[in-house]
Image (cartoon, rainbow, N blue to C red; front, side, top):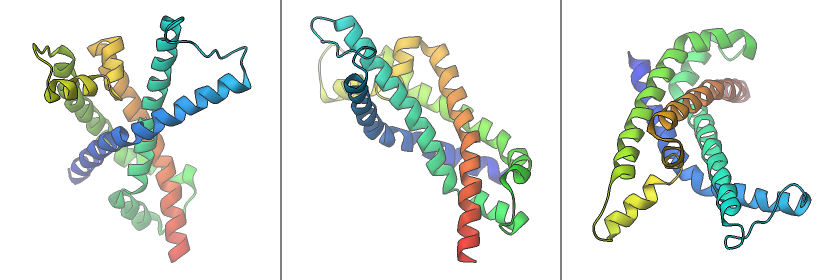
Length: 199
């Protein structure tokens, strides 16, 4: 039961970290798209927000969605690598001498289900914030209304705004869980390296 609680805490930490990372990731994705325009001008166009508004906003949307997925991935890897409980469990069982492919079954047997539950709860919680923000209507403009307006289309909110609540929630859950599982591989490499380096 303890590992479920820890998985939930780290799942929520991953969610919060993703929002912070998104600020940087969105800038990087924009820079990368501009670089692609310079490198492959026949494939990637520099659309005008006035003359080609539809294509411009579509390209901007793709940038933000890619940045959001990248943020979820990086947050999962970052948080999992620093999960001390998993680190200690793996080292206790192996003393740091293991091949990744040999310890993967043991790792997933212990943490796949807790991560699934944590990803599900995190998705429900963020949906409980985003969906009301999407549905909210304000008669007057205020700091609060501006905050809600910014939040509902920021990071994960992009998918809810463009795809609808059910599809977006399913996507966010699937991506969060998939990257949380994948992050275990990065964690196993980091924990082994750290243990063998300092012991």
